[in-house]
Length: 247
Image 1 (cartoon, helix red, strand yellow):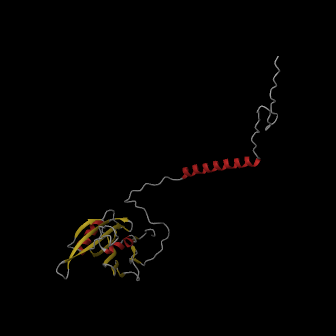
Image 2 (tube, one colour; image 1 turned 90 degrees about the vertical axis):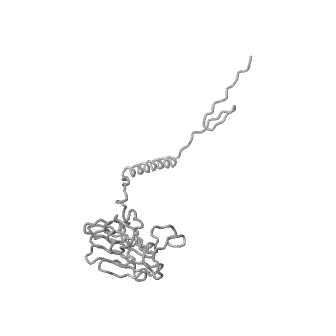
Image 3 (cartoon, helix red, strand yellow; image 1 turned 135 degrees about the horizontal axis):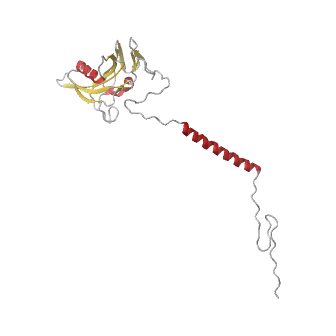
């Protein structure tokens, strides 16, 4: 008769081991501080998710713009004036021009400012206004070319030309003038016109033709190809009609 087998005793408390290899693992312990941190982290995650969702709901969709005519505006902050400003006698327009310590010699006229560049290849920039009298910018530009440069030829038209952030018309013109050696000197003219309130604001720059190369001008090819063109844009964009916002 075989001897009766004795079963291994069952552990009575967590962590107790008994012969035969049985072991009861203790249950995980959570302190009150751990539970509090867990609750706080969950609440914070919920708040962040809700905030992001709310911001997505209230943020307006970006507006679509077609340029031109909607080509944006300059920064809305109050600008810092670094150059003097010409204002017409009737206050219909104004334009900034370089001050006395620059490379320009400025002459104020009733209709605007004439700037003679005293550096580089030289040149002349005329910033002025005149009544449009119902004419479009292209017609005004052509009338001025016929008046000031009757024997010239248009080299090309400027795409998306603007004066004072107002869409208009622009052209680059070639003029050949006799020189002392019996030949002819090539003069390059750039004219830009925009109209608002039946008032045309005009920038007319002229100087000796000089092709832009890596060693001259901007360092890149350019259709302008005269030295004064490098400095025209900031004055062309400074034109303002009466009632325009500061810029």
